[in-house]
Length: 456
Image (cartoon, rainbow, N blue to C red; front, side):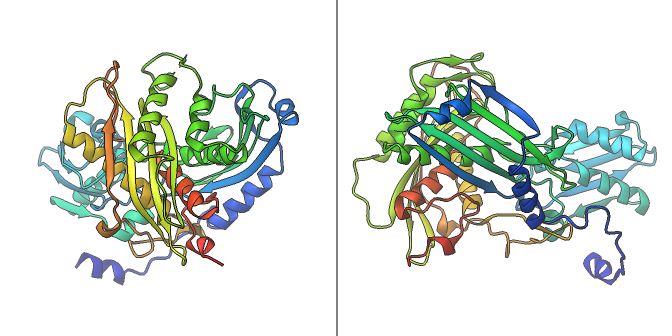
């Protein structure tokens, strides 16, 4: 009944000042910004230009990744009931109840202490339910209707009104010396924001790998204004940046004539500690070295003969206090279809795994989530509107496409850390690097374009 009533409405929308925004327009702006000097510097160590001038080989590449929807199986929803005393009760699948109480109170003019929230187990959140817009809407409708209501967004509304993982553009330039050592790394990062401030989850931390591992390193940024709502998504920032940084590192390894895994170990170098241990800015190289070596052993890296158009890719990343290294075996058909045969994961999240089966589930879910994003997920805009609306044009992974995920935890003498986030970022570049190993074609734009992988 609600859907029929809604479809009968004749609405004339005000287009707004951002009606001309589109994905094609953002790409064109990025290209124009690449041709100019960057607007701000995120980090600068040494003299990159001088180092590149003396490099034996210089490699340049551009990488892009799209906006992505959380696409939880359970759309946003909330049940709201107002009492005769003017107090409000909400049942909501929120990840962040207190800010939800505050935004409802502020928007509807209610005292926060007059709002009670029951947290309901959600059908997936992945960061989307940190924003509580749906709670405000349900409360407002219930007050207008003068009765308790249960509000459930349609799939189309949920996908077209998400707090998206923001897209980004990178122009990279790096050099290696005659021994294969990286002597300089430069990145012009075009992201979204204005006046020197990034929109939510679009920024790059100045300590993000490979910062601090290369003496001559520089990352600058320029910003594109947008009104597209953005927000945290599983492994915020790292889920996109790992694709760029670890894929480009794989490019450097091949340019230097080195085995990618050995190249990564050499770049990590001798045991060192950057920053304060067990913090987001801290980094212990020995922990990443250990998981990288072990995932190589468990996957049989360099010891197995693979069929034609089948390859192994490796990547590692530190995020949310977790050290993870992953190897993907992928095969690419003559028509360009990518099939992931298996994924090996080794993670160091501290001294204790409290719930072993739950921990394995978290890692496997993260890996499958990352693979799905890599193979086919993107949100695009046209005339200020989101084009995708449902799983027909934003495909989630089917069970039949889910590969085996071998998970191993390497216990270390460190406090337990987060686990729901850090296993996702490395699988994206590991899969792209595996595709390169299988076909010789480098993936620099997500999601993977099947047409570009077809045999001639």
